[in-house]
Length: 100
Image (cartoon, rainbow, N blue to C red):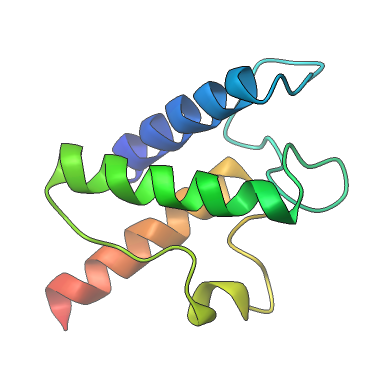
């Protein structure tokens, strides 16, 4: 599932990068920073990314996950550090919904 989530986030981030004309030095990868030092997005860019990823997960995986809630935003290690960390956070949230 994590690989599917990485693919979704890469696609959404790439689309957002093109729409917002965000210049990057390298192609987007799992370790590409999303937010923070050297990040692709500022705080205003996180909201559209989170919403688009949530919608893509719902459409492709038929599952609901909240990525821009207080739990995500208050983590000591932000899930928005990189594409991979957001995919891991989403996978954990989806797993906890199934197990819970």
